[in-house]
Length: 99
Image (tube, rainbow, N blue to C red):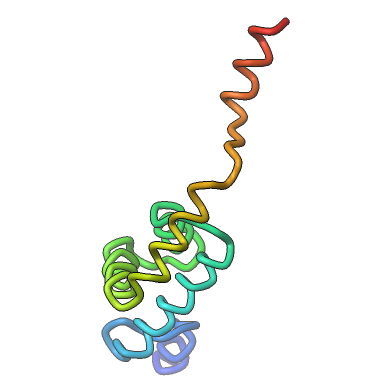
């Protein structure tokens, strides 16, 4: 009975049991976040909430990716910083002033 629950406990690689697989999984999840044009903070929060990845792990993998792919990240950060500013707070505040 214990073996069955242990076997089904992890639906993805365990950091302690299979560190290389776990890190590779975190890297793949970060790459998905990048496809969704998330910044570092958004990615860390999303992985913590939806995949239960500890923020320190995501941050460490993010930093290694950044070191290995400086040109890509420089272009990436430039492209996401140019996206239109759409904040509900700012829009509603300006909307009230114009009334």
